[in-house]
Length: 171
Image (cartoon, rainbow, N blue to C red; front, side, top):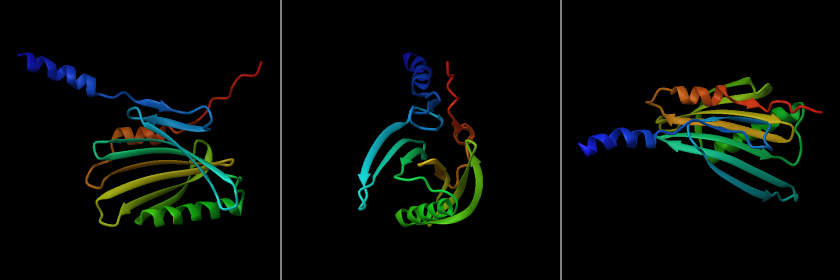
């Protein structure tokens, strides 16, 4: 009998609450299904420019969520921005080659961005990437799942809740 009483308690303990991730220095943020793991990395390019990558990741039930902010040394404008999106996609494909299922220009948090839906080479995984430049920062929001699993409501919420910061009041 004691074991039966522990099951609902264990279920409540293991249930994770949605967690807002919107750091003070990020212009965009979103809602994760549970508390993400946080990490930060700084690198210096051959030209001596510093690039800072901050990320939040969550892996659960064979699914992965990612929100990343990369502070770039400059702000790509006009045709440079399209070139930067293309270069980023090419780099992403070199790091983890996949089949492009669809690509589109979309608004992300009120900014012109890109959406890439990719499938693993063996057809077992689907990744939905949303990328956008806000000034000199590149934001990446991604969700990956087994191809056999339908998109859960938590993933829809993760993308739907990408928002900018509320304007601060000036006294």
